[in-house]
Length: 63
Image 1 (cartoon, rainbow, N blue to C red):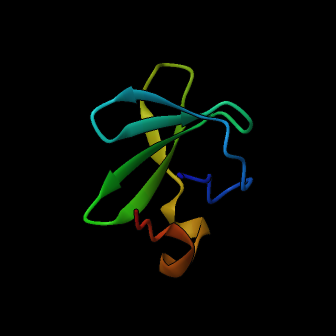
Image 2: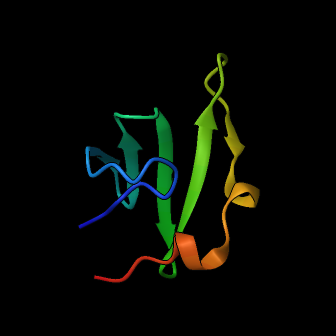
């Protein structure tokens, strides 16, 4: 099960192919090549990367 690397919540909703949204801390997650990429949704709808806040090991996703 997918877990948010930011808040550790499992309250994750699917919003697209390999795209998810954390309903606890309101960040968008995408999965690419087994790595979770984290983004903050800005007021204008654009995305800002939050990946530099996490170690790669924290962002690994395996089924």
